Length: 158
Image (tube, rainbow, N blue to C red; front, side, top):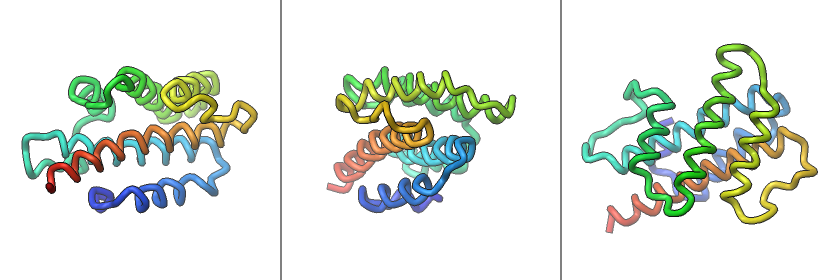
């Protein structure tokens, strides 16, 4: 999935939509959302790296460590703390499935609320089913990270 590095914003949007739109199983949605989020984080961290040949797709850094790197070095302005909080919650949700085979719906709602605080007012409709709210929240987080990556990438090329 390393080709994501070269995607423009429209291609990235198509990627996320294609992986989220027809999934009705919440566990699968969580796992795919976690993976796409990690791909996005990889691109962003590679762009921040001083190593011009950095490849976070092949490095063996844990997801938690990558979130820590974003916490310390990310450039998301006033959204940084809330973004990191949301990423940590998403990781905790995914770890719950991986280690206990259980979906913690209360934690998912906390994650959705966390993302909703970053997004514009009313971004996630409270009337939507949990699966759709989760998809919107995760898509939003990925878009925040990828758009910042995309802007930094454009600056470097100029």
